[in-house]
Image 1 (cartoon, rainbow, N blue to C red):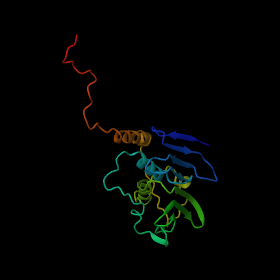
Image 2: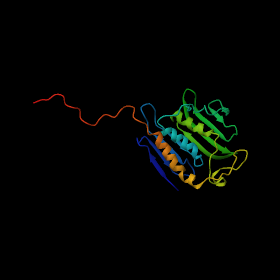
Image 3: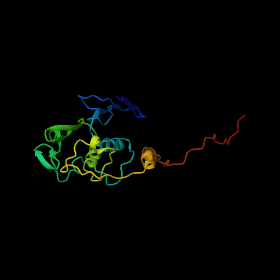
Image 4: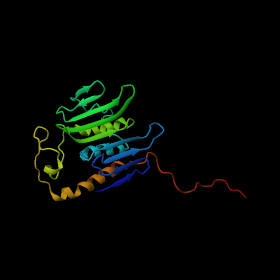
Length: 212
């Protein structure tokens, strides 16, 4: 079973992949900062990779694109209220979002997917997880674009036509092979921010006064 441990360049965030059949698989922990206590985010084994990537991309993106939601509830238009305190359910009833606490003192987030009475995956965000990161997750959660899977029979939790629609598509091998490289280049390009001021010369200043 793979085990991965990644640390951010500033040593403030630690991403751990540790497969555990009885617990969350992906866990990100962030240290406390002057304006925010420590927080964590965890993702169950079957959490779609696109959702995890959306959260991590928002964490590592130095500048959020214009129009990016910052309220986690904003993308969930059309979801039904299931409790007076921040409880929502998706239109098909497979995903439930709940935030603990109250309006005055909000707590942790729990997003759970079930098929019938069978749990599929759960995501947890600690109380102090930045709202814009949770919003990036909820926006990806309701994104209508199709997701790509190599084998729908094994990669998807269900083939129920009332929940998902499968459509086979032929993809060139070269496109599959270059997908990861293209993503790495795109992520690297967004971090290449030009300096805002000219770089100072490394030569020492000229001496205008002469002393004996």
